[in-house]
Amino acid sequence: MRSPILKAKNSRLTLVGLTGMAKKGSNNLKSHLDRVINDSEPLIVHRSGNESVVAISLDEYNSMKETEYIMRSPAMMDIIRKGEQDIKEGKGVEFDLSSIKSSDYPASGSY
Image (tube, rainbow, N blue to C red; front, side, top):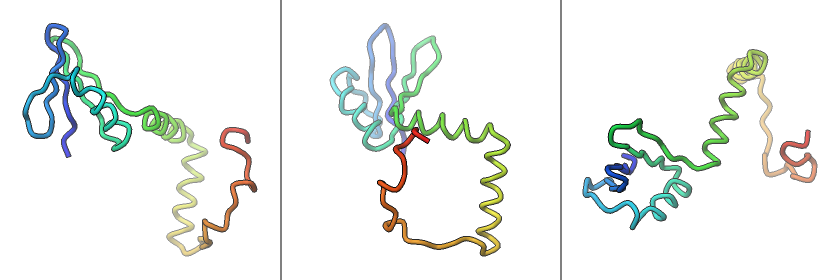
């Protein structure tokens, strides 16, 4: 699926959507930003004579930064690789995730 594209020229935004038809970006900007959030669909903004930018949801951005942080840690990557190897060797333990109660674990970020 192609991402919608905003083209900026002379401070006016034009949206080029999946159909290839241009629409004034300001008229549909909210719906396209909603699509960025609800459908995890990036919005590419081409700026005439300037670098292009991409709009993504804050959740997606935070997820990317967390992945980047984890991947920069050799120790964390070793743990992940060992876990993958254990699973390939049949050393994994199967359990029902629905049996885990959130009250058994601290809130995110508090441990």
